[in-house]
Length: 270
Image (cartoon, rainbow, N blue to C red; front, side, top):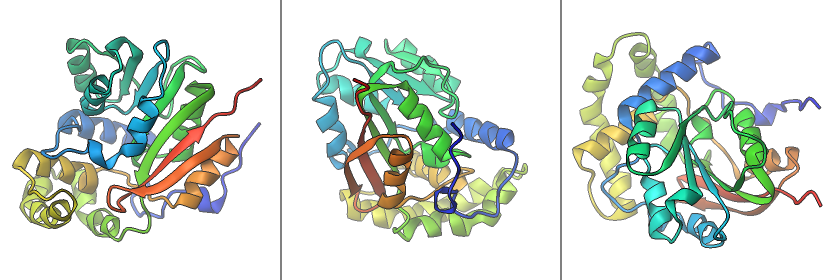
């Protein structure tokens, strides 16, 4: 069955549309460089829905973390009581995968647009801040549904379209990003000091502390220099789920209104 893309499900308009393959390679280059995960503040307390779902996993059930980065959340799952052999991480960055395997986790290189995993292998599929960076977020979402077992759950977190922050940090910085991805890498070094000062205000209001340099560079590359940053409403997330035959159990604004987070159930086929 072919699923038609409705206008409201298309990517947020952006002048930087280019070849999908080139964009994916750029994304891979960026996240191999930044190894997203470390930030000098506790992110776990801003994701209560995630740990509600983790706590419900049985001893023989598995969690797949798609776009796991350097394993920040995988370590939190272990702290919450999961065994390492219950957790499988998938990431586009070979450096992240190598690091996680060295730490005793199971990790695979993979693209959320085409995971290469068997159907229906995951009891809890986590995709936290990932599909909005792809060239085709709905295709990525369908992959999450495909690998999730009937009766299983998808935890999805994406950028909130109603937060003006993303218009400032990503949409309005297009000219700098255009230069950066066309070989002018000096642009990032020139922009970063100003961007870090800008980031300090919302981060301090959110967590009560200032960013260290490593955290500042991580956020800068992830939110300003990333080739794609699609934005979502709760309605759009619900529509994704409906089109894939799934049910949204919860859909909330989280992380101080920066994210839209949903718990999505895949119906049991029986």
